[in-house]
Image (tube, rainbow over all chains, first blue to last red; front, side, top):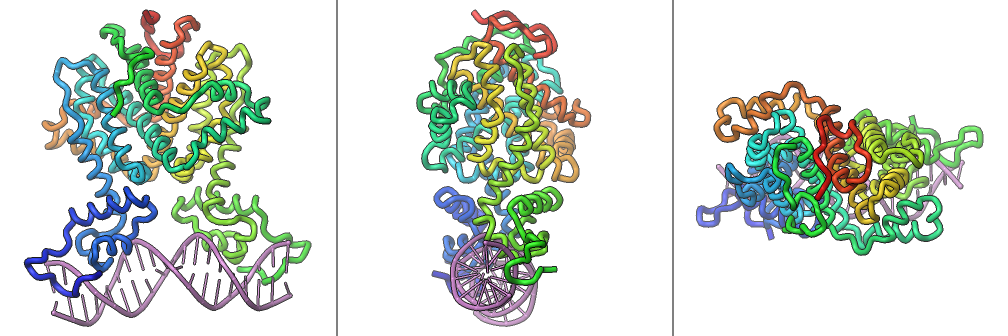
Length: 241
Length: 241
DNA sequence: ACCTGAACACCGTTCAAGT
DNA sequence: ACCTGAACACCGTTCAAGT
């Protein structure tokens, strides 16, 4: 139900950017990224679609604003580590916070990854504490950048896989498994063996494994640093959100 | 210049799927993913846009077909490793092949990642040899699946970052660096330090670092396997206790 | 200053009509 | 069997007109 044309009366304040972003995020979370159109957004706001252009210059900017807002959420979620803190804890905390934010807005993940400028900027803004712990631990500047990028790239890839796995109805890996253990078993025996032994995919375990492996690999560069028993092992499971 | 309506004469065979995919890939490679529309594709083929629907049921299917074709390219590029081969070599070869294919079609990377079903299927189809080497090396079934997923997720994340970095004109990390080393230096000192020391980003070095670190981490799980000096530069620390 | 509505140049897709 | 062209229901965005 569109309101009347013209400047809104002072007591009924009309649109503002915050409101628009809220509505946009609502649509994306509930109905998916493709559902977000300027016209649909106008309907959600109870306003003429064109009214939005007075507050936001276009759809592209609106999307990057959405991405930035999500990273602002994350910025609030990441607790800065103390000076003496273990860099491994910092890595786990950062990765877990990143994943957590992505899990809250699975339909936005593709937009985040599409807008890599905003995403890397957001990721870097939240990662000062991570840089600090790595530098403290003795990583050189280039090693630190490479390490952060490794973590960011991995989490991006994981988060994307996790988000799109959620959109597919029956787990497609199950389908693949069924196909492999069926007639195609002879073509890919090793895959059939590996996937055949697998029960339900535990994404938490998988994420923990990935992060733990990366940490173990980075530890290799830091032979002097203390070994952290949580770096690898069967009973960790604390990267959970 | 559209050809005449009606069934084409036998000597002028008209459209076929292969031709359509070629044209679509040409458009995406040259003009980017958003440039690919059914109408634009029709123009590229010198045919009525609607003629395409007689060979391909819709745009979505066309895109997954494109993704599958790219993975078929990769399938040809991955040379199966021998039984005795080092699993680390298999990991490096697979990752490098995957990255190579993505680099040839940077504009398609987002489509690949969007169509995660087709992508994971394609990735898995090319990775039987990887599964085999990991299994041979003594990785358990669950560990093998987790290891492959770790590699796939990382390479997906890296490839995406690499592809979109290519689309941005001036390296946006340079911009961030400039902003950091400017007035904002006090807010993010560790980042400014790390990025400040960095010359031109060497993406090859970064990718090698990522893969080497993952391999080193996975080696931690395989204390009995021979140490590969190429896995990482300096000494690799002792076996797990 | 802020909202509106017609209009423009696009989309993907359906469908009856051509040969 | 294969191609065509009008048509439908959408897009993002511009712009003159309202109050």
